[in-house]
Amino acid sequence: MSQTLTALGKRIAIADDEALIRMGLRRILEDAGHAIVGEASSGSEALRLVPKVLPDLVVLDIRMPEPNGIEVAHRLKVDCPVPIIFLTAFSDPQLVKDAADAGGYAYIVKPLDERAVLAAVEMVTARWSELQAAKDALETRKLVERAKGILMRMLGLSEDDAHRLLHQRSRHLRKPMRDVARDILVADQVFRPGKPPR
Image (cartoon, rainbow, N blue to C red; front, side):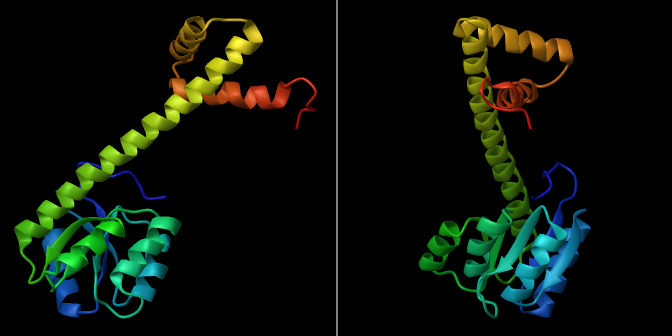
């Protein structure tokens, strides 16, 4: 899983079949305080590189040797989710649509413009962080609801009382409610009547 994006420099991987483009991107990004953690000159290299270096984001050329950037993005979305900035020399509306469908968060048209590159990095950082926060909130809500159900069943509590108990336990243990809820779910699995402990 990709490391969390921060306000500090990002760990970035670049995949483009043109060495001059990779050099230009490296200079722009490193001058802005980012770290280039890997480079690839083809889609197959990118697919090997990204899971190995786990970058915060990837800059992918759309039209590089097989598989192309769109296909690489589709595969990464499944195997190694990471925010993607697409890079291309072609300003084609269909490419923009394909890039978005593949999970691209930004699209830069060559030749490289420093301001456009850095703006894309900032935009991707913000969008990815928002998406991860929303996923975490949803996961926490699901865990808390399940834990409340267990407390209601086991202790005969109302929903409000079960929520209050979770909240109190969270404060007392100085643990996030998500962790307290997960502990309750694990305990329920282990000690559920009729189920031998593992």
